[in-house]
Length: 106
Length: 488
Image 1 (spheres, rainbow over the protein chains, first blue to last red):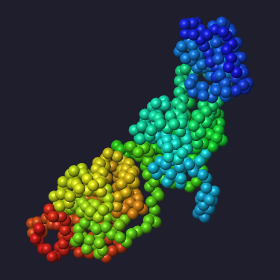
Image 2: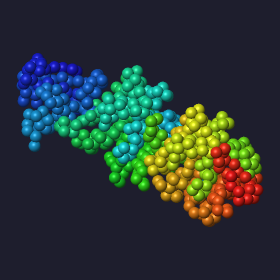
Image 3: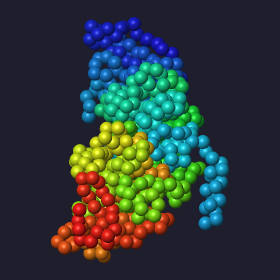
Image 4: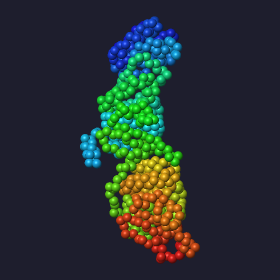
């Protein structure tokens, strides 16, 4: 289930690069929804500048600890820093954009 | 009445399996430990010792019972946890590196979190499950799980998930402790008690007379009998301790052997050869009447006969006791050196009564003395009212009796009128087996010490008033009439 949808890299020197990691648990409807929502959102707002890594915790349970995952789905913005965490199925696009700092906080 | 008896016995017969904690006193009041394979809620205010109790459960499980454990903290980092228990002699770091304990610190910053739709806490379940599998855990502690309420926005989702978590823990058949912060009107701030129904334990922290005492109470223990009292708890260099006060009954075996009082003349007055072993002795009297001297004589005698003695001093330091008693011919220093005599000198006001009691339990447990001297009990009124002091002394006496240890108390009486003398301030006389009274009297311009035996259960004792003589050769007791007016 681990996929990289864009060839762009997470290298630090690429300042405008977005490195996003989505944690899900199994391929239930909520996980699928979160993946789809994320891809649509990235294509709309970050086209060509992002890389998505999807981690299924059922397959890699030990990875939950490193990124302090409690809730799933959780989207972690690894780059640009600082790290942000966004929980839920990403259906509220406005709040995802706020969480990613693409929209100013109210 | 009959129904409740049947209830209790059927519960005991079905006998739910217990998981021993190894925590001093705790297994005694719970009849063997926590319910095995079930979650237990540990509620209490901040600073009550919730983290310590749950950590000790995990550490002792891994170290002493061969049951590996997971400690998941929602408040502290792994390193903080390791450092915090190191002072208690728990080598958590080694338990972690040898794969006997898994630590996981869950940190969620509310400010970092944006909620964007439906979610659940499967991540937490996976994390916990992976830690359990990694070490083959049989025990789990979730410390401060209610911190999640502060970090996750949706309370409804959280509640549903916590309910699922506790069911999940049960299904995994791990023995779990979940700690929760005390709430205002409810047991825990976020009502965790709603989800944990098998066993609920409450820790409390109260201050009276400017002295803080922690207490533990078992609110609920499904399928098991348990003590319903509030038990004083103690946190010291050995970790957590619960004082099993009510375990002392009146079913202790009594001894027919005696311990010498250390004074030949007094042994003779007591009909046999001194105080009964395992009995309680009170020496009360006015200031300077020789109470501590009788205590020293007894301590010296116990040590000389190869026994061990705990001297619990509330007023004097060990050095001071040794010096003063050397002046009447008792070399207590040698017994301190040989380790037969152990002096615990501490001001009563340093701790609460129950803390003192718990410390007494600890020391007696480690030292296994033949006799314990409390000199004087009157000073405990500085930290509690008379009723509380009486309860404490009752517990001391019950505890020492059940262990077959001779208890020797001194008590200061105010005023020298008979009416004052024959009632002790602490009103413990009814608990006392042998009660000696000392008082000063003026005879021909000289102060003399008089001793008489108010009571001594189970022995034919003298009813005469005798004179107590203290000099550099020791203490002696002579008949008052045989030595009229001529002090030595």
